[in-house]
Amino acid sequence: MIASLNSATRHVPAWPIYIVSVAYAGWLLWLGIDNRLGPDPVNALEHKLGEAALYLLIAGLMITPLRRYAGVNLLKYRRAIGVSCFVFVTFHLLTWAVLDVQRLDRVWADIVKRPYITVGMAGFLLLLPLALTSNNWSVSRLGPSWRKLHKLVYPAAILGAVHYVMLVKGFQIRPLIFLGIVLALLGLRFFATRRA
Image 1 (cartoon, rainbow, N blue to C red):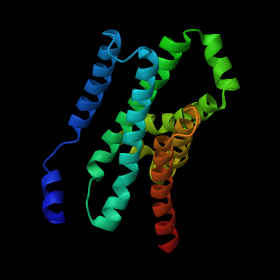
Image 2: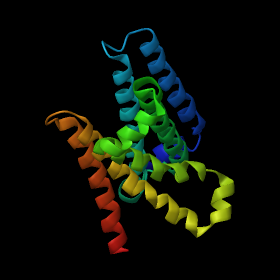
Image 3: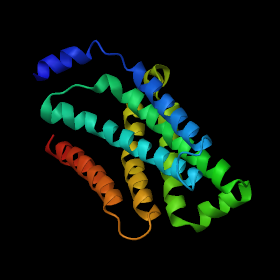
Image 4: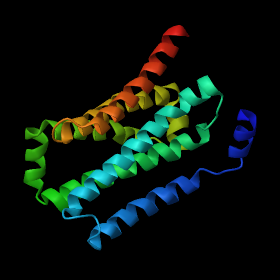
């Protein structure tokens, strides 16, 4: 069955991931414009974009454990998932800065004064070089350094999940589940590296 799945995915291109991601982000924006995201559409849009980014971040982190422990090879989709994740993080950031805060001085003030925004912004900055080097030219130019650079996704994933935990008010199980999944996936990588 695993062999059949791997054989089938060899014929499925990665580019639809970009199309679906942009279409979903556009659909969310349209729902906001059409006032169908509840009483606070900007806040709802921010959260939905951020959650989509976390889903994709977790999907990207699952690719190596799936190959290592289950034999499912989805490596060809990792770049598309990673870039799409960055697109959602960028849209999440822009929604907050442009539609919510709306003033550059207040954006900086929020980054400095609100810890959950500081954490989220740190995660975004860690993802930035990964997005800029997610192309064949960078892979060949950077060589082995490319792989080391892209390990920044690990602290970025933790910061993204912690940002979500800090963002919500009161005790909520959903953000903790996201954080737990991220830590579990990173733990699998850590133990696999130590055993190698």
